[in-house]
Length: 302
Image (cartoon, rainbow, N blue to C red; front, side, top):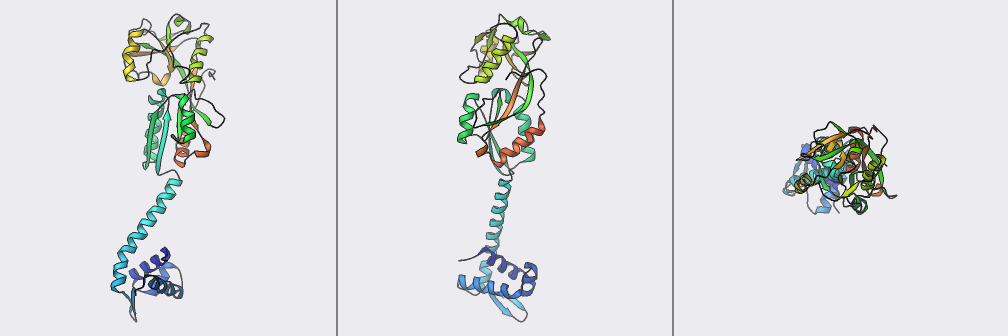
């Protein structure tokens, strides 16, 4: 059976045209090098070198082998380098699931930095509901999730990377849209567009808890606002929504107004399944840790 090291030995001898110089290049003695070349000739069944007092020359068989051996070794070296880079998280594919709000600032910022630092990792992103993320992580459909008010399960790990003030998202023509700040109590009679609990349980509960802290039970509406096709419906509805500050300016036809009292924050976290965390996902996690500093400006709704 042919051995790669024998091909490397042959390549060195063919390029140096000398057993002694090839031995020096390979940092080995001449005798085992000569024996390895003869073993290669035996395995192939043809003489590869013509040996003489002035060195060695290639036989027709050796000449035919030379370029092919060079390509084989280059291919093997390339494959080994690629495997090492993949193991280091510098090559491959990274699949990231994300909550609606992450598309406005968090994910674009991380994605750009990651692409600049690891250009040979293909990053595939998928917007999804929070409730679907745990199953997607466990099954390997995604490697990481960037989640607003992430669902917590014992099999998954989560790390908060960003804490943002809550702002009020209003249709641009809403009577309160021109205000610089809104106390939440001023919205007690408004309809609140809230993600359905079955699709984002912790986020749904957190948003209702913010209203209850202000002393009222919100009127929950299921009028959607998170996709481009929903904006017209939301703008005409008169409903309001509580969203993280990074959404500000990102939804056409709406205005985002800061909260007065009580202020609140929402957490964005990275979520992963440790047994299946890929090297590329580890790199992304490290980058996210350094790119964002999670600061609580008021007690988080947990």
